[in-house]
Image (tube, rainbow, N blue to C red; front, side):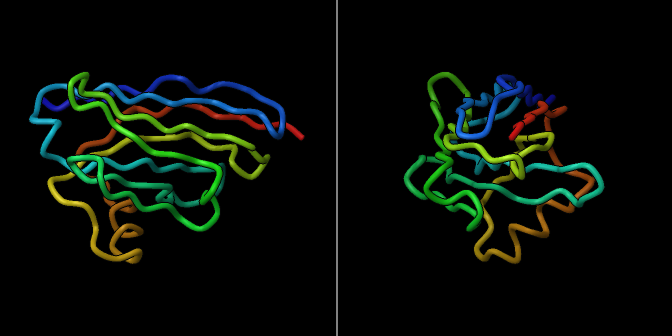
Length: 130
């Protein structure tokens, strides 16, 4: 069955960096879109970034542009999120998810984040202190 396992979260001070990983198994990773999402306490889950199957097309929400980089290694069935210049507002549980095709619009990316079905990891906590 599909399994997504996130790792790499932790506690850092503002301005610091973290690299999240998402190890995928149980499906054809290399032909699926991958996404990163996050959920802060008391807030809805929101999309952060997504990447197409070949890794050639990426999308970022405005709040992380220039600071976060999504990438993937299809040979290792692993998705990454490099997070630099972290801010306290980046504090959240970060999830990876997969679907066959990437969303075609920012609105559809938002809808993906609200889905309760589909394939999601268990999450990894990122805490940024000021």
